[in-house]
Image (cartoon, rainbow, N blue to C red):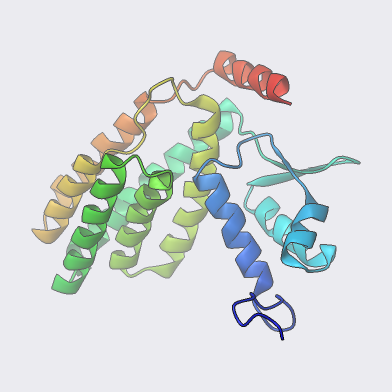
Amino acid sequence: MADEQTEPKLRGKHPTEDLIYERLIDAIIDKHLRAGEHVNEVKLAEAYDVPRSRVRRVLERLRDEDVVIFELNRGAFISRPTVQEARHVYEARRELELVTVKLACERATSADIERLRAHLRFEREAFDKHDPGVNRIASNFHHLIASVAGNPVFDKMLGVLIRRGVLIQSVYERKGGVLCLTHEHEHIVDYIAENRPQQAVQEMVHHFDHILSSLDLSETRRLEADIYEFLRD
């Protein structure tokens, strides 16, 4: 008799491609997959017991988001942003987040505020415990603000920019750099709760300045990262 606890095969109408997509995104955000690394299409297909064509569609979806690149006769690789691309991504994300936090101030309900504060408690605990998934937890805070803003288009756009931001961090972050501080998130939520959009925007600007200060957006740093990647291979 088959073990009742055995995980079912991921076939038919099961949203397998969405599952593989989310697993890859989680791996990127948690920095298990880093810029420049090869994504083995065959192994992924075997791991999820699906045809390679389905894995390829997932990778093409990530390519369309500039998260994956295809190299002729070599396969798929996690993209390595250039300095110019990094600056463009952070410029776009900064402006988008300033709009969403302002909308969140105007539209937040008491339930929204409690949801944000519950997340902050979870985030604080993760930081204190050095949880390996802390990057994903911190990123989810920014998704929550977009959710409170009530604009799913902004939320989707922000998701793409966050993923590209993680790749930028994996290449350009300074040694010991702090990428996302919980106490700054707490200040932002306080201003949202008090419906103080100007202060919330100012705090978000400060937050992004802090994030950018943890990066060395220079060609020298990018070349160093390339060398380290080569040595690791």
